[in-house]
Length: 436
Image (tube, rainbow, N blue to C red):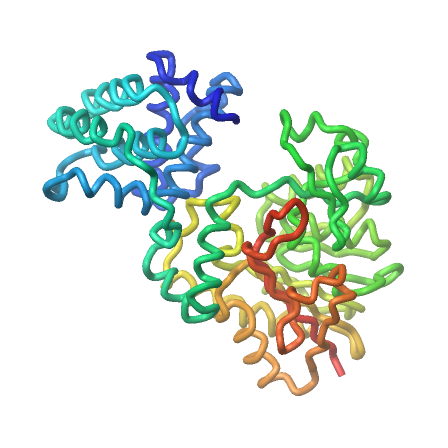
């Protein structure tokens, strides 16, 4: 949604949209609810597409720029808000995000903020404060300190793992909305031309400008391609030619990698414990006219039987590599959750290894920036499984992008690594292991 469209949302007609944005932000920051779930709970399906886009832009900008907005607001507040101040802080955050980063008529933004405050039993006592503080924000220059938008627990981790400069680069990359990447079944160059995008060296197509709904784009109805971040498309490539080979795809939903394997000629068995998500995987495979055997079960309950030529485990993780797409993640995840996930990942990896034929390959991957969910997980696995060895990767296997290959020979992409149109890609980790 363009800046001009956002500015038209300034009048009273924008009040329902702001009510929805406030409810969504309260759900995310108060209940640790994912954005998509909060969006659904706010009943925004009843909105016009333009209003729904405005709500999304307003909430996601508030999350992407949360630290910077709060730093500016603090300049004009003599003391902290009391505990019983209702939604005052959220109203200030939403309004600051629009005034500082999205534009819009200041008088309308402030007027609507005061209206929202008066509708809340506890916030109404702070309506005058909201009015006064927001008036002081008019004309104030926005900050350019993206590290402020990263919660301290996460910032400390990234500085320790990647160094301060790269941590800054990652934080800056998260301020931009992720581009639309697709994986065509065939003819990458042709679909790049038809969709007005570019063919990335890794085999994905990056659509230059998002226009309208994805389902309306050429090739969608005939199943010529599916949406998949360029980084998410890399782990399957590490398995090499899977034509005619048996492949087990563990934790398969939402199904992009399942589609890749099936399109490459693999005999795919895909498992995931979510009935709803696997239903969507089947719908996507039907649209793409691809086949795979789907099994709805907990991966740790999948019965041992015939071994597979290749196994792909896209393990559940903190997903900190996808913050560009999900800016709420830093505020709904915690270090405690990461510790819990690493335990699950270790169990899944050990169980997945039992399905690999001698001489077969096992690819472990996560969309996390955290080493406990990536490099450390694989090192721990190898220390306890002498029958497996790391197969180092070469740049040729990832479109010549040497920056994606770690010193140890694994795959590690960062949101700050530019690829195509000077845009980044999701943070991903993958390692290829071979059973001796």
